[in-house]
Length: 83
Image (spheres, rainbow, N blue to C red):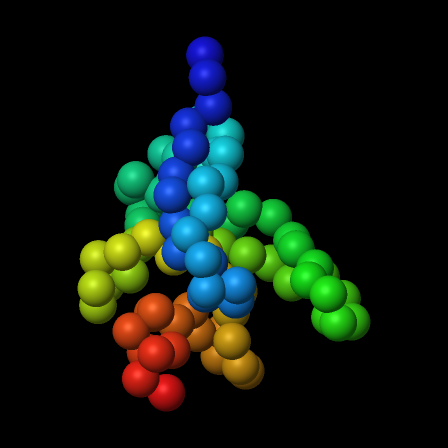
């Protein structure tokens, strides 16, 4: 069986990317609207951060991002563009 692939907008890079998910990750995304895709590290970052794919309740789009701030808020691409 082929691994499910999801297209999501990466809020850090500002581009859309395809992410391969395990069956369990795909099921969590469909049931709960969010799933962890592991830790990532980008250039000039000191360490790794957990990244999540989630369906945004505001715009309905799929986003790939890490939790922001003390409360661990996941942002929407429309919120980032308006900030």
